[in-house]
Length: 372
Image 1 (tube, helix red, strand yellow):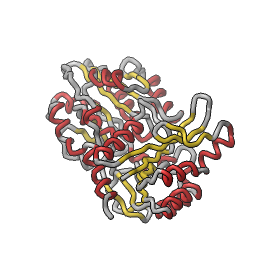
Image 2 (tube, rainbow, N blue to C red):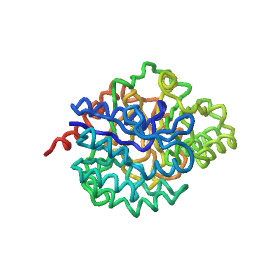
Image 3 (cartoon, rainbow, N blue to C red):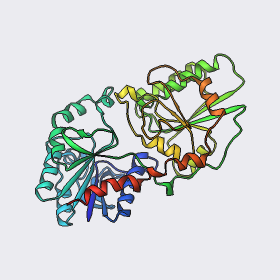
Image 4 (cartoon, rainbow, N blue to C red):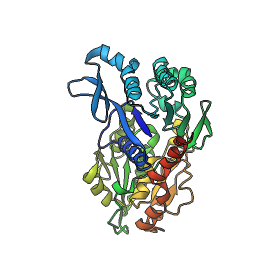
């Protein structure tokens, strides 16, 4: 069986989504599928290109015309799929349903190519509440028609149907070979180091933790809590929500902005940490139930963590702390007490999610793909 994993963006080493896609592809290869990866990228000299496995299949050139063509001209992808006799196209949805992407999938379906459409987050409309509302408006017009062209939707939610199409329900997974278990346990009797890793969006709610720290430090406590933010704010809104209260409340000695990190540099930051911070405001984007990749990465590293959504894989785990899904500041004193009395070792935390390996999760997709 031959499959093409189609992505409408490029890859960056530090980016969690990029790593996730590579793990998914590797897991499907382990299932016995011959996998190829098609993606869009922009070169240093601004050439806009479609590539498959690192080889250019279409160069649109530079300038405005190239920008337009990359959104509407998918002939190179169609030619590749048909000429290479690809059986399945696995498309990671980029909220880009329109007549051109519909035509792409419709053409492939007519050629007996089967299609899986992965919708990474659902629902997602409110993610666009603060910017570029035209994107979701156009998406609403065409997404049902686009999903009709797919054989099924791959979702990380519990929905049995999305936009009128059946779903394959999986969890975000972990590639245990590439995520090291923490090696250092610190004395937390005098201080606590928190770590939050993300491309920081408003729904991560790190501002709730910052406000909680502001309230905590008003009492001049002797016990110190530090927060290490790893990743860059997505936009100006997120930047202001983080930087302004840090300055206003004088929290610079306790909050560190490390920017995007990966590889050994990221591993070293984790070795300095005691507890992790997941999403604290998914309610802002209208989401209650979600299975985020970050929660699983924290657990794979052996960290307990705090989050506010409903994640069915972790709700009963003794090493997680649930924050209320509202706008209240995080209760730092309660967090400290939770962290001072850990109920699980790093090894036990990692072992608790062994069933969430990418190979186990993508096997559910493979089982669907091999059906007649």
